[in-house]
Length: 262
Image 1: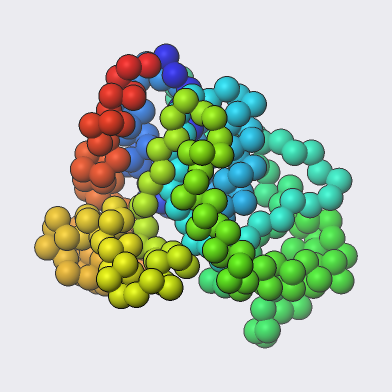
Image 2: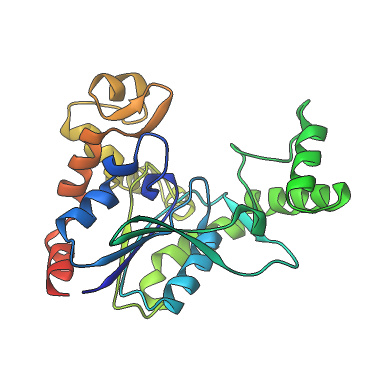
């Protein structure tokens, strides 16, 4: 028996809306039930959240880690005077959701920003200051730092290099990097159209669309018509898509051998 962890954002998260027992990680656990599974994935979180999870996974003596690339502009920050700890939620005898309590950290991305110049600025700052036990000034300053870090090309390039070298950095028995979403990395963007196109086409979302006759994987109307996403408003995978991604992208011969051998 091995301990298996899933790290990532919403595309690896068990409790993302529309997923749960339809999710590829849950279905993988059913295929290889002799192992013990820990799902750390948390929607919208970035690579530094992954680093916190990797430390906890190492403490738990995890053997196998599945980790998906996420967007480089997603930034998190650990708050002062809080315990560095993760909470468990038992889903089944061999599947556990593991998550850092939301009052232990703040997070930022341009899409889900909590500091903005919009009309909701004051209410957002007040809300986060109250929920995270910060003063309003602390919330403002922290928001600025996160926003600047998120926009930093140097920070984004670091995230690319970190993800590409994750197997060298951490001594788990196996780390299995996944390219689930349609993400063009900072490194790729500097090397011309050919490499950018290659980066787009190697991810699971693109391959899923291609296999079902959808020309543009970012066209949610067409992806929904093909039954591949939750809805036109929610581009997370449908049960049909989760099945296809698991069988045709995640469970490579090498990965199957790793899970069978343990």
